Amino acid sequence: MLNKFKRNFFAGLVIFIPLSLTIYFFHLFFLMMSDFLHPVILNQNLVPLPRASVRPISFCLTIFLIWFLGLVASNFMGKRLVAWFEAGIRHIPVFRGMYEAIQKMTEAFFGTQSPYKFVVLVEYPRKGLHTYGFVTNRLPGTIFGSKETYLCLFVPTVPNPTSGLLIYVPESETITLQMTIEEAAKILVSHGFVGLPESLNPKI
Image 1 (cartoon, rainbow, N blue to C red):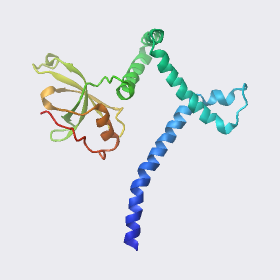
Image 2: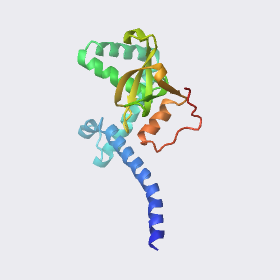
Image 3: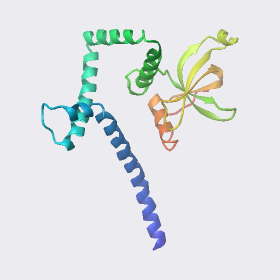
Image 4: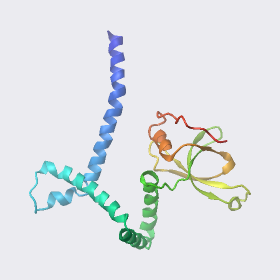
């Protein structure tokens, strides 16, 4: 009886943990998005609203606002406005660097065109150990006193792939993987529990 209970319990745990974590992260996302317009809607006096409806309404309006910004930015005038806005930000010394860094990271994981070119394996933090590196650029080896091409790699951390290290590595010391950025990010976020794609075929 005890063994049967343990088997059923752990079988249920395998279902419960990912389900509860998914609900938990969706709840955090809901709170984060709804906090954007929550104070505005809560303190407005134009339309009387039940207090319980304020947060769902602010969440829906925030989603709509993000969609609307994307719609505006997709036409000619919207692109001009965004360009003017970014040009103004680039004249603010400290804020400029922060905005550009966050923008690149957002484009990397949510944009249609990722700034990362491809995924490689690199020996880090020591020989014999390998980790993922996202290639952002190729550089001539003369910068490093070498004739070989160097790769500029962003080495993401686990389980948050939006933070990490920037390193420069000779291209010959990396292994190029037939893997998308999204596939590598899933492995990182899951602590490696998500398996390697079947199509993975390292090019050494």
